[in-house]
Image (cartoon, rainbow, N blue to C red; front, top):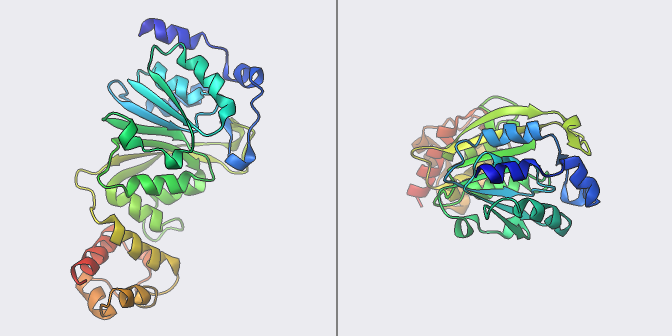
Amino acid sequence: MDKTIDDIRDLPSLSETVKAHDLGANKKLGQHFLLDMNLTDKIARLADPLSGYSVAEIGPGPGGLTRALLLRGAEKVVAIEMDERFIPALAEIGDRADGRLEIAQGDALCYNIAENLAAPRKIVANLPYNVGTKMLIDWVTASPIFWDQLVLMFQLEVAERVVAQPSTPHYGRLAVLCQSVASCRLAFEVPARAFTPPPKVDSAVVVLEPLETPFSDLKTLGRVTQSAFGQRRKMLRRSLRSLAEQHDVVLEDWLEGAGVNPQARPEILPVSAFQKLAQTLKSTT
C-alpha cells in the first residue's frame, strides 16, 4: 500500500494532466474541474474510514478526487465516466493503484452500483450539475438502501435543498425524501473560483448517512410530496385533492387521519407529517 501511495503521489499535477491530455470542459455535460488536491482530499476525508469499502465515483474527470480516495485507502474505487476523453488520464492512475481502481465508461444513470460494487459501499462524487439531483433521488428512494454513505458535491442551491428545515425557503420535496432515509448535513461550501472553468454559482458538499430505521414507503411518500410541493403556496386541502381522488379516498378523512391541518401549507410541515400522510394514504387504499 505504501508504494502504491507513493506512486500515485508521483503522478503529474492535475493541471499538467489536463494540459497533457488536452482536456477542456464540456459544458453540455456540466463539467467543472476541481484541480486543487487540498480540496479533493478534504472531500475524501469526509468519507473516512474508506478501508474495506467499495467507492463509486461519478464523473471523475481528470481524476483529482479519484486520487484522493485511493490515497486515503479505499478498498476499491469504481470511477464511472461518460466522457471517453478522460479514460487515458484515469488509466494512468489505475496503472499505479495496484488493482484498486476500476474504470467504467458509460452513463452513470444507467450504471447499477448495487450490482457492480461489493458491499459495503459509499458514493463519493463531484456530481455533474445537469444530472446530480436525479441521481440523488434515485439513490435515496432505492429499496433497500444499498449504500452506507453519500458524500456529494452539488451547486449550493441544491445542497441547501437537501438539508433544509420546514418554514425555510429551500424546504421542499428533496429535503423530505432525503431526510426520510438519512441524516443529512452540509459539510462545507466551495466557491465557484475553485473550479476550472468556474461555474456561475458556488457549490457545497453534503453528507448523507442512512437512518437506523429509514422510512420504507418512498413510493407513496414521493407521490404525496410531488402533489404537495407542486403547488407549495396552496393549502393542502387544495394541493392534495387530485391525489386523494386518484386513490378514491375522502380528502378530509385522509388529512384528519394523518393529524394534518387541511389549511396548512406544505412548506411548514415537518418531515414526519409527510410520512404520516403517506402511511395514512397507503392504509386507506
